[in-house]
Image 1 (cartoon, helix red, strand yellow):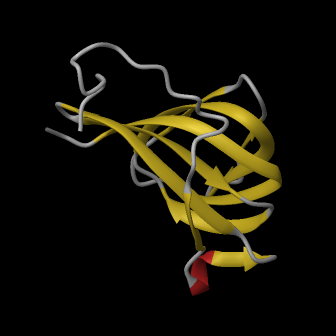
Image 2 (cartoon, rainbow, N blue to C red):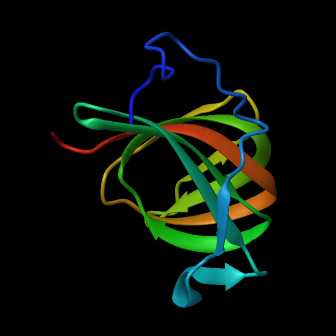
Length: 120
């Protein structure tokens, strides 16, 4: 996967309209409601993964990667083990430390563009 179109040129990605592959949140990670997760990878660069991710309304838990994201739509509260919170909405940039245990309470279907450090 690259960040360029098939002809080698740049491309525009309509992130709000991008088709995501939706799946139910795995059993023990689904805390409230019937949340679903969706994702669409955009690019793999040396040491980085870039994509669009979505979470329907509901609550789930996760263990985070080393990530920076920009919320495109929706609202959520991300709660960390120590009780601290990030409340995010459209236009917000979030930074998640690797290994952080989180609880995502999604109030309105969330869509974000993410960049994850993969280590290479």
